[in-house]
Length: 322
Image (cartoon, rainbow, N blue to C red; front, side, top):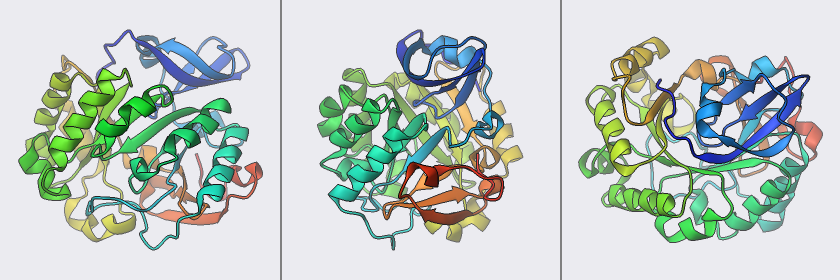
């Protein structure tokens, strides 16, 4: 909701369209439009400048392939979040197949790849997979629960463009209730290690009806204390294991927007909301190599087909993609 206050230059991915450029921000996951042509591929830009450019929904770009994708190369996780979007019955592909998918994404016109899971830091070859994507011109982020981030931050620092750490509460009592004893302290240690290594770092938090109102301000205060680049509050999606909680815990987009509007515009960190509407049409590549897309409004997710060639990423009006 508030504009980023950092003037730090960091890596984005750009695509030229006529006299303008479309910019993917790996830290926030947002798409921006610049009024000047900035070239195509990985570019170094001011975070302040990019944050001031108009934000657009990826569907408005009318691209042939997604602006960005979420790639979940594994379903394994050391935690068990009750609203997890992943399908634990999906089989994980082997190492060779992971590299095949990384190379396909690198060869495509996709600007951004967020590596998620499961817990991506459980992958020993994660740095090498990032290298493949970066060599192809992608901006790469990793979304993690943070529990293994402290020990892996140094190896990621020279590679990844951003890290997003998921928290369920602003303190151990509220966070560990959902994720297990000790997980908060480990995540905070991971955030501090990532910042110390110079990795652009953001906190992500899923809004739940039972906790949002009492935790949201404290989460922003924690982010300011830690020195992260911002906080993104995510609307809960009724997908995967989270479907069982949806009736009791989902906020409407209007309710979530009203909650965030109560935050002071003078917050010391950038604060934004990813609504369910904004998540509609988003492309996910699961651990078995199958492409899925959120339906409009992100009230469900649909399986499309395996990712075998770059043409399998093509967007169509029929699948409601963005």
